[in-house]
Image (cartoon, rainbow over all chains, first blue to last red; front, side, top):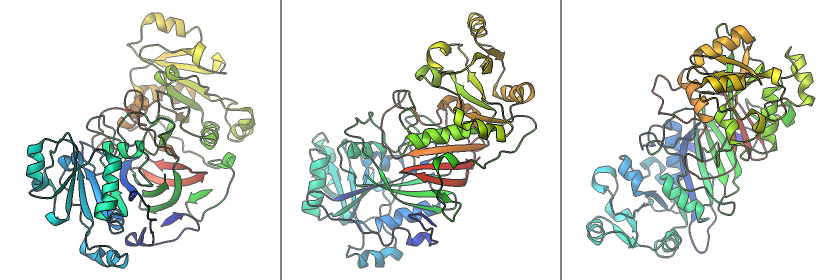
Length: 245
Length: 245
């Protein structure tokens, strides 16, 4: 059910955000963050986010992936749990209708180069995978990673996003965490929208095992965005919130 | 605007939760927690919650106070900032209509006995104030506090709530944090409802300065409640969520 904008409307989970389109920007991709959090602000338990959201959250996550050129995560998120960055077959038509390739480009951001591709990345073809490394990444690891994926060494997130736009044609980028990557993007004013699933749970837990959706220093007044609510959907007791930053 | 239950209805902030009534329980008060959090789960910045919510949040907080026999906070919350636990004059009629005393009983929970009543508690009469101390509280501090307020030494939160019901006639108790007190109450299954204001902000920040609404160890499956959404209100970009635990 969509609660906002009113009037409320019933719809299937598979149709949430179906008709959304995102503007193109000149210098960098239009950047979305999608995260799930408990009512007490926990986005990871024992370092893992996988168990916080329910089936509707996973369906909405796939809907968003179906609308984007690329899906990006931090390497820490991949180290924490096995996951896939792919879009399932049944959303191929949606991508085609939006003029997108069958699968989004999968992007992993790493400084250390410790990226357990073979053990933790499920179901992805290597020709669809890009590693964004830093000048700090050890050369031996860059070499090892480049046998599985394209590797780009970028100075910072700004130049990473410029490269994604300019060299990889990424107009819309979906970021799925982790909290340190989210924080770095928000702090640098690089995020356009936040999709937040509020799971009806109280989890407790403390750092470093329990994390919020943003982990890093307090944002200054200038760094701190002023989110505006775009829409609210409700499935079961899970709320799906969309904000423009 | 109330978004849920549908259909949506427009109403003034002063009327939010106005017609809510809470059931009476035999052994202990019916316990509500009211907290405000940013989108990234931060309920305190630099230890203080005061700046997170907007005017609508403060109005809704007062509406809830107007419906309850007693308002409880942890002493750490009082140490962090100056605050009042009182209900303003214009809500006196609401309290009278609900058969309540003009002001709720103000309750401070402390283990150390470090409760800066004179410097940080604004606008409250001493005859309306109760300190819940523990067997660990130093005797000298108990003596000092008892010249300003009633003091009860209680073994644990269970017996504290039984005493509030049995000796102080508290049928409905509103808890306004801090996160450690919230955690202890939830962990012991003593909370009936959660009122959560979701402020449209991304704040960042790390412990101990930035806190979530629950601070404490990960809750076990048995301790972790299954919140059910009762209502959703929206004022500006602030969401007001009510859950039954």
